[in-house]
Length: 188
Ligand code: PAN
Ligand code: ZN
Image 1 (cartoon, rainbow, N blue to C red):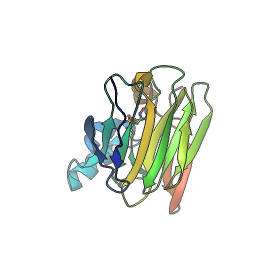
Image 2 (image 1 turned 120 degrees about the vertical axis):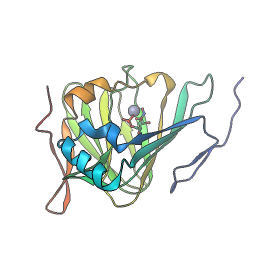
Image 3 (image 1 turned 90 degrees about the vertical axis):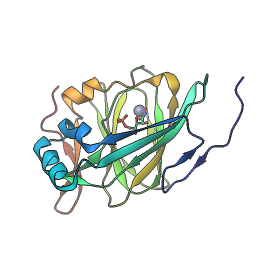
Image 4 (image 1 turned 180 degrees about the vertical axis):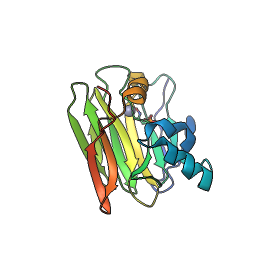
């Protein structure tokens, strides 16, 4: 039998108490997602293989839903920023929400039929990610970007498509400000 529970989420650190699991992504694991992977090598040569983001989960046994936090460190690689892998959900018809707690960023999305959108990530904004839209979050600020995600347990992740084709959009710094542009390297 499942029992209700109050889970404490710290909006600054992203800590989840209690949690059921977590993982950490190092910058090196994200190398080939960047338009200029050699700049990741240069970054790592200078700063070491830094933490890019942590994911902390609350996934109760037998539940249909789960939630947790993603804690993204700030950083820049050329004109791009620290980012998540990005994925479609493996199961069609499964959406998600991203509720930003601290920091600032942008959520890049595209649908299976090729429409693109970008949603600002800042405290107070809860992004709605419809089913069948790929999503990648980008930390465009100088502080940690912390957000709470909430989805169904059976949604799953399909990383392969984005890893091989890329996202349709890039978030870049242009003339000192954030610009969301088409990805010239996107493989249709
Ligand atoms: C999130 C993401 C998390 C990390 O929990 O999994 O932010 O991003 P990647 O999975 O793209 O590396 C989510 O969207 N779950 O479905
Ligand atoms: Zn997702």
